[in-house]
Length: 415
Image (cartoon, rainbow, N blue to C red):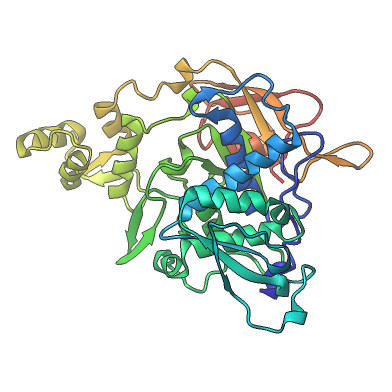
């Protein structure tokens, strides 16, 4: 516990310049802070599916605090299996009638202190979401305090359940947090965003040499895009790339930021084409861009399309006219989902925003945490520019023809 506390002496605090933007004072806990920020934005912009008011950026301190409470509770609910377990500093805990407490540290009383990890003494348990909201609301000051980020991390892990965490892990020895710098692993990011402690970003599971490698099992509320995909080190699956809401975590090699918009047409329920792409890739375990002709029947069956033998045989000949025994992805999509890859034709230029908890550096060396606003457009083709911005490279893994014009003098950074 001591080694984990060093990189996380930080609470959930909002910027004085942007009332709903969390401040990240150090480089380590961005996996947690950026994830919480994404849920805060979701709860501002998409409350009960109604459009946010034009003045959504103008919040009182109490409104921002309640958004934080709501977002933390939602993330805990995403990982809950049996009951909620919340970790707080013992000496500052405000009890409520709906919770039970159990001591998690049996060391001497005098060692307990809010200035050290030994002050983390109590885990409180709740069974209903309403009770969790009450407990978090009563103790929100503690989460805004020095160890708030770490207390929330512990709460997520214990609410998920250690046995459940182990059952989802491929490598039990894999750390969630780097001990030296506090950087969160991909596994921690997936846990915060989607509620699953898996280390891969693809859809569902893949089998490699008889070993099952787990990915994201269903569409996430918040999306994830990474610069590593732009460099062709990995490929993010559709469940993270196309989330329920137009909010994405953007990952560089060392940091996480948030890209978001109020344009709901960017996301939503999985389209038939997206489902077709996902199912096809689940049968293309090596990412070759093709399947064998013999796999076509299984793909059609998984998609609930016509899969009787005569039809499958006909489609094999149609999609594999050279009789080489493979069916290309592009041919499959063109045949079964023609005209469905036309997002750019439907989406007009839209307002986009970027959040970086480390802030924007001013000429005098000071930093300010505010949302950077710009105008985004998605073109049918990729019109790449020389010396492309990192953020554009990252977004092109989702929209190859995207371009952005930012307001003001600051170009958002992924670092």
